[in-house]
Image 1: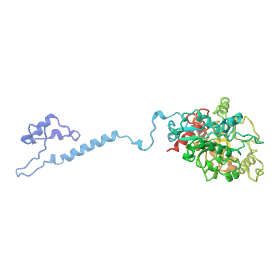
Image 2 (image 1 turned 180 degrees about the vertical axis):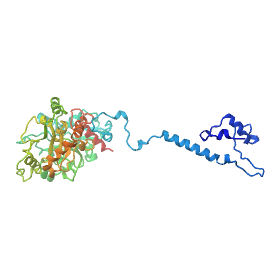
Image 3 (image 1 turned 120 degrees about the horizontal axis):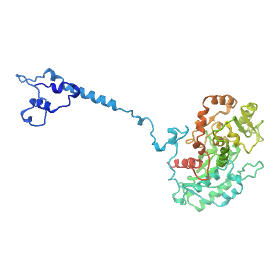
Image 4 (image 1 turned 135 degrees about the vertical axis):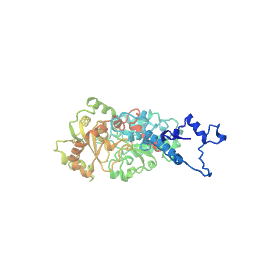
Amino acid sequence: MKLAAITSSCSCSWLIQDKDLKKMEVFGSARNRNEFYVRMKLLRSRHGKTKTPFRFRYFKWILWFSLSLYFFATSLGNHRPATTSLKTIIPQPQLRSVSGVFSDAAVLRQPRSLKDLRVYIYELPSKYNSDWLSNKRCSNHLFASEVATHKALIKSNVRTFDPAVADFFFMPVYVSCNFSTVNGFPAIGHARGLLSSAVELISSEFPFWNRSNGSDHVFVASHDFGACFHSMETKAIAAGIPEFMRNSIVLQTFGVRYHHPCQDVENIVIPPYVSPEKVQSVLSMSPITGRRDIFVFFRGKMEVHPKNVSGQFYSKRVRTEILRKYRNDRRFYLRRNRFAGYLSEIVRSVFCLCPLGWAPWSPRLVESIALGCIPVIIADGIRLPFETAVPWSEISLTVAERDVGKLGRILDYVAATNLSVIQRNLWDPTVQRGLLFHNDVEVGDATWQILNALSEKLE
């Protein structure tokens, strides 16, 4: 008998047809002859020894090799790279159409829902807050984050009227609305006494302050040096943070990357207040993508002789150096006097200088971003608002204080290389929203970022 029918081709050697079965039965034993069973019985010689014909000698190895080759080729054809282990997969519905600011990694930085967060707002006597609103400046000047945060929280979904279920307790005390000084700037000498009085009141009427020693209570200190409550750094450091606030959480505009006594408290760096209504009014007349005919802009205090009566140097001489170096440079639009319509100048500018004053932060930072002018931050060691959510490195420039004399060359280089990329990132509306306070909490706005930062402290 011959087995040519099943061994003539390796590719089909595993397929046995009916006619082949009839031939194979010859090698089966008598008891298996009527069963659907095939047994490869070796031929025996007349001496009883096993004898394997040449055609069968390597049959099983050929069969094994053919099957292996077939399945290997099949697996290659069906192979797809296992990319899921190399990158994060974001569900398609979560992706938004944005103009380059938030990559996939940045989308992941966007906060989760705040639906489970609960904030109780103390209803304090009017002398601590609403009485101050008789002066309209109270809710519109650069320190007005304390007012804006309170107003937004009152109407927000995170507010609870049951203090027993609250995660945090908000202290609505306005300390930046005393405009009794000669120059019209806010006086904050009364801040410590007013805040101390509020704490005495709530700790005597409610158990929650004493229960946690104030650790879950939130204050706003939107001043030059935060909870130290003084505009001059040396005096702020000497006074320090009030003892009764040291266990609490402070929302403050001041923040630096090095040790400083005025941030020796649990804190969240927030932006200074800039009116969203004023921003929208300017943008309605001059769109953010419109013509920008001012290369470098700065309007503000620049002293020719920076040493003041206290013996300290304003802006660490940085602004004075900018004036000295670039006052006659036609690329630099520098103005020392005040101008009520200066926002209309920002929206016309490519670069907006944001040098330190007495403190490292400045409202120019928010104004520039809101109006699409690239902020040039000149304040060594500054901590910026909401650094985990706002892509600062993609929308701003940072220049060391010692390099202020090289500003011209630095900005020329940026303008010739990646200006369009930075502007495209900066002009995304999600960036602007993240630094502005609104009457109602909007997803991604400044109050929402504060709430997200608070929720992260619960984890």
